[in-house]
Amino acid sequence: MDAADMGRDLSNVLISEDELQTKIKELAGQIDADYAGKDLLIVGVLKGAVMIMADLARALHIPVQMDWMAVSSYGAGTKSSGVVRVLKDLDTDIANRHVLVVEDIIDSGLTLSWLLNNLQSRNPASAEICALLRKPDAVKVPIDVKYVGFDIPSEFVIGYGLDYAERYRNLPFIGTLAPHVYGGE
Ligand code: 5GP
Ligand code: MG
Ligand code: MG
Image (cartoon, rainbow, N blue to C red; front, side):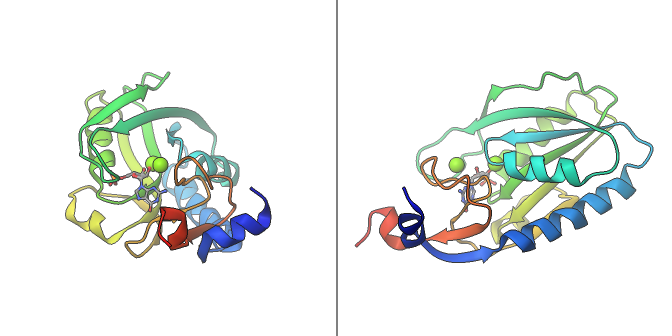
């Protein structure tokens, strides 16, 4: 796909590269302050969180370790079922560690809610969440998200780690897709 094709697939740039990078520096500043003097493990949820993990980690001034989990939500269609399968677990023992889970987006919140319970059962010193994006439905789930980049409308977004059928993850901004990409028109 060349740039012109990519351009036709996009309907709108929702959050520009500059806005993303500014917000990530702001989040990093808060995390630096909150975890000063503590030993922090940041956990990226594959694959969507790769971009925010890479940029956030470089914007932090405190020393951190990085680990990754891959999870998949069972259930047909595009909505989470809340039943989660671990495809790749942490390499790290998190008992007595401060853990910050880094996610691309919270929609229903079911995936993160399950993940947080799973991590909490391993007795970390603390377990918190940093999500780049949050959709309105997330308010229905009783999970406390300590750091949020942007609250966005209930639209399907792509770019900066987020995919549609494994494409568009490499875009440096967050956008919405043109309807023809979904098979319409
Ligand atoms: P939840 O369990 O919160 O409903 O879903 C979380 C996961 O669904 C996210 O980590 C992401 O992989 C996927 N997801 C939710 N909304 C979107 C979206 O607007 N665009 C993309 N590309 N993925 C989404
Ligand atoms: Mg994700
Ligand atoms: Mg996806």
